[in-house]
Length: 157
Image (cartoon, rainbow, N blue to C red; front, top):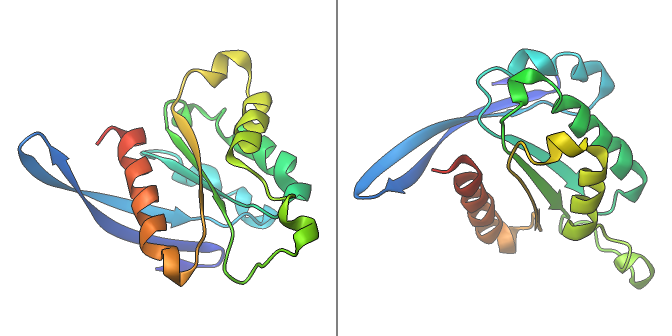
């Protein structure tokens, strides 16, 4: 299903609980970040199990704004206990030259800057993690496996 600024998919994830095999249905909402769409985000907060926040590793200029927006979203009571997975990505099409290679965002930098945007009381009230993925055909399986593992850990599946 696709709406302007939105993509929605439901997937099944197999999880092992002790001796049981269980499938969990997960509905993924790609809500887009355009300011015209942001006003609609709160309509999707109820029954949210995990918030996946995606950041381009080359986008230093918008990092603080991006993390401030995430922190602002997390003040909504519907998201108070929702785990957050921040995914830093780079694509195969983005080949930085030697001068900008050192300028890529790192997990540690994003984690520290994210913590700085949260109030002290808020920083310890939910689970969150920062990972990075490559988003190219060669690493797609590894990337999806990493994201899936983080889903399981954060959602305690």
